[in-house]
Image (cartoon, rainbow over all chains, first blue to last red; front, top):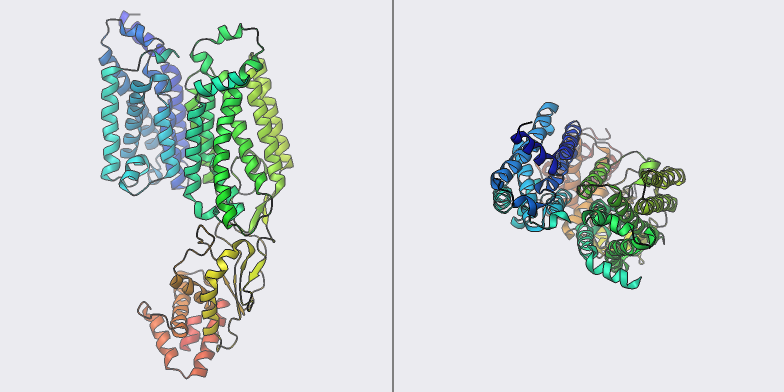
Length: 202
Length: 438
């Protein structure tokens, strides 16, 4: 095994990527089940829950077992973090979108735009939470917010639109802006600072 | 012990859980306040329905709390202490379950105070329904603590919350599901019900058995040290599910005759509402009397107006009561927080008058319904003198036809039209004289 490949394998293992991949596959299976549902509202709901399920597993991957120790090593961590976040979010998005297309029930489909927004913004929210609270607890803000959005349903005032951006259908300017801002801010913060150190071992 | 509990309360996520749980439960309960603010049965339903969002929160918090020792890598250290495992874990269990239960209890008390100010009927069974909701909260907390200790991964908490939310969501989507004893028992939410039905206490009993067993499984999982003990810990839950399903009634929602007893206007007994909605009577009196007076000259006209104890929420499989043409039945689905009728006076008058002329439920086709509605609008406008500017062309023709007739013939045709409208005939034809008695 070349040193580069070995480093990659070690990185993936230290980030629990195999277990995360299993969760992504479960989310894909759930998307498939959602696509087969007859009730459009229920189908939409289940497909969005599948997104949350996938994102719930992302937090764990945003830091290694000992973040402080890793940072002392002379690696290009910003690049690694950028690639990690992009590839992970991209993998989840690609998987869910592909399953949605394969299931071929376009009448009930969550539009691709909604899927892109949901996956990217929730992943970036997780990344932002990792910067603020550490990777171990970073699942709480995105999962909590997303489940609340699903439970509350779309609201039609400006604050409501901003808070329930994921379930707005059709999307409004506010419900497009909020996930875009979250994506940019979350990704940038994580790439710049990484997961908050110290807490990851707790 | 008390010192340990206090320390746990200060240093664990108990306070955060209390605040989040209270806020979420309060917010979701408030969302359908008009449904429950004036009667107990819907309060129990709505309160139990908050499990949809509340229980995933509790489960996630408990799993997180249960994984605390492992996250901090002190499992082996603590296992070496001489105190027995259950004794050592008791403060954590007490604090977390206590936080969740206190949060829900606080919201229940707040809601109960609101309801007690407005409710006019109590079957005495509502405390049982609310207690089972609290028991479900405790059971899920204990289960979460058990899962947190048993599952060696930090993603268990979010995955647990999402999976529970998924299960509860799918069970909600299957609205109008056929009664299934196992599903009714296992779900923390009650089957759909309304003010005129009640949940059999035997369902609450079955659910208590199931949730108590689930709690025992949680405790056993929490204190289990080996894989074998963890597998065995599942036995109470399985047994509780089986026993609960056997104890549960096959149809848990039954009519509540005491709630649907009629309470009538004291002066003349011409206007009646159900006991559970008796605060709606003052709002109904004026429009109901106006309609009855307006129809006084009509042969075979209505003599009495009463609330129809039927709602859109629940298909009632009781045989429909024989229709008495002298009694107008009105559904009052929109009520205020105080139990009054949440309709503009003009809308209420319109609804009562329309129900006095036609039974729209018996017209299946859109065109037939529209014709019946036009007939009702024409008669209402004529007899009550309400504005005619919104009448459609057909209704306008019927209105003009009636107005041009001599009084006796006019009332006879209104009587015929009403008879046709209540027996699924052609009320508009009866007015204009084309195809009367069809």
